[in-house]
Length: 395
Ligand code: PLP
Image (tube, rainbow, N blue to C red; front, side):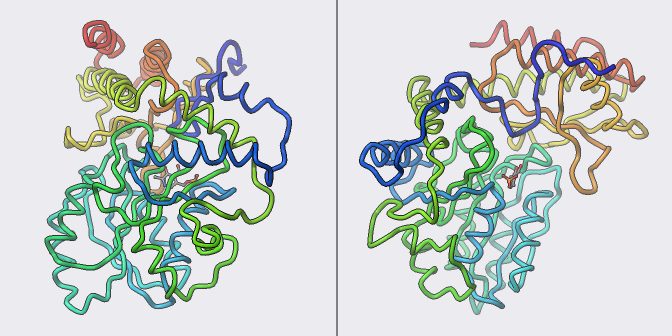
């Protein structure tokens, strides 16, 4: 019988654990979303999000998951037949591209090994070849949730500039924003896409887009049809912030977001990033220990590209990652992420983002170590001990 006792450890890389403080903030009566009291809340939220995006440009919201915000970026920026360049990183970069294709865009890809951080030199070279500037935008994923590889957004911006290419730069920060450093304005990012359910610690169902002046100008000439997603409508009459919302505003999300942003302010963004780094490093140390005796290994090869929000772990050949995950869930009530696309069954993913502490991560690592024993997969012993040693000696 499945173990359903105690806390359910939901250690997927999103949705993440929702702190009690946020749940309590949402446990509140509905209010008139057209009134002054709600406007004060939404203004506070949009200003707080700007600090996390590190931007002074508008941020627009939708009642939709990240897929909706992906689609909003496509329909607002492009016309049928436009060409976009996908910076390949994994399942999510691939899927943003598939959606672009479905809208009748031409999709070119800068090929990249899924186990390595994206190589900006390849982007520069491919953009240089586009002498007629047919490529309208570069679409990239900051943190590829499917592989646990983080991509170098600042260096990618430099590559676009070095190629003297006018393409828009659109970045999916769905599993990085609020977990490790991202700078919209400093990195010249034109469109930022994020969802509510990961670093922002909220329930699933809301997403946001940061839009630069260049992106807003592009939307004026884009011909793909859009109504709900239309940034011009959402910006209202020349409002620097969201001036309009299509349909009923999900006020409870805003109650939660207001509380989440207050938590970020109290902890300090840099401290939030440092906490994520520590928990990620403890996880990596556990995996490096398991790697002994030809055991499981970190999927992300370059140390600089190893994500601070999710660690993907490749099982030894011949051992099913999903069988191991099932043992973790059934015996220890710990849910891990699985491999996506062609990685299904080959790897498992440990999410370490959002509202987490050392004991929660150690608990999950202990469950993984026990499940490795139970599946009979070869592995080094003492992964949890390596994580503990690191956590007890690092600040
Ligand atoms: N992009 C990335 C990097 C993701 O991790 C996800 C979901 O995990 C998505 C896009 C899709 O977002 P959603 O599931 O909120 O629609």
